[in-house]
Amino acid sequence: MTGELNGRRVAILAADGVERVELEQPRQALDRAGARTELLSLHDGQIQARDNDLDAAGTFDVDALVRSASVDDYDALLLPGGTVNPDKLRVDEAAVTFVRAFMAADKPVASICHGPWTLLEAGVVSGRTLTSFPSIRTDLRNAGATVVDEEVVIDGNLITSRSPDDLPAFCRTIVQTLAGVGAAAGDAR
Image (tube, rainbow, N blue to C red; front, top):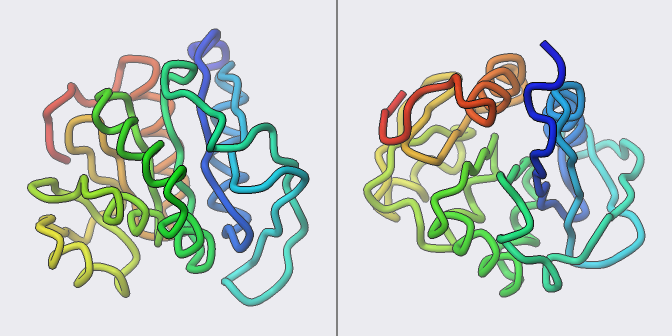
C-alpha cells in the first residue's frame, strides 16, 4: 500500500559510521508509504555510511542539524545502527536531548541493531522491553531494560529490532505503526 503515511514527517537521526542498509531500507519503506523523511545529524553536508561497520558504503546528504531540530516538527524518529554511529550520537548532548524529548512526547521511536545505545544514554530504557544487537544487550540490561531475542519488539511507542536480517519485519512494523494499524500503544511485542 502506498500513501498511508501522507503528511507524516519522520526524523532519521544518524552520524558518520551509520550502517547503510539500516538507514536506507527503513527510509525507502517510509518514503514509499508517503512519509517525508529528513536526515538529522551532528554536522551539515554528508555523513559517511558503512557496510558491516568496516567497509565504506557511500554517503547520505544531511537535511538538518539535530541541535536545530524540534520534536514538534516530526511524527516519528528512526535510530539506525552500526557501532560508530550511535557511539557518536550518545556523546552529543543535542542528540541525546532530542531522543529523550521524543520518548517523553510518546511519539514512535524505531531503533535497530546498535541504535539503542543512544536510547540508553538518554536514560529511557529502564522498565522497557526491547531487543538489539547481541553485543549491547548487557548494557541495556544494566540500564534496567528487559531484553529479548526477537526480530521486532514493540513496547509502547518504542520499536526495536536486532540486526539487518530483521529489516523486512522492522520496516513493515514501522509503517504499520505510523499508519495506525500496528500494535496498540502499551502492548509489548
